[in-house]
Length: 112
Image (cartoon, rainbow, N blue to C red):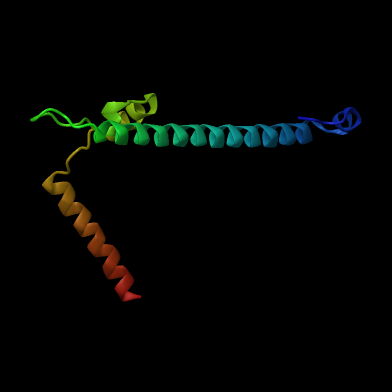
């Protein structure tokens, strides 16, 4: 954290906790930014490699694979699993109740 020894000993525990938390938050943000930049550079490399791959003619009837299939990354799997969460369909009764609650809200707003 780079604290001077005299300054460190002059701090109360609460002050030190605040400084340490701020320092930790800053380090976390810096690491996240570096990680984001690393992913972005890998994505650029993957797209360039895929474009080179697509420039090579395929045999008749064969198709080129997509970018994610051509060079899969670990973070692609995480994003994919988040997208595939099951969505529960609303029943007719739930939809009716929802519309009724909206109508009540609109009626109250129009009344003002």
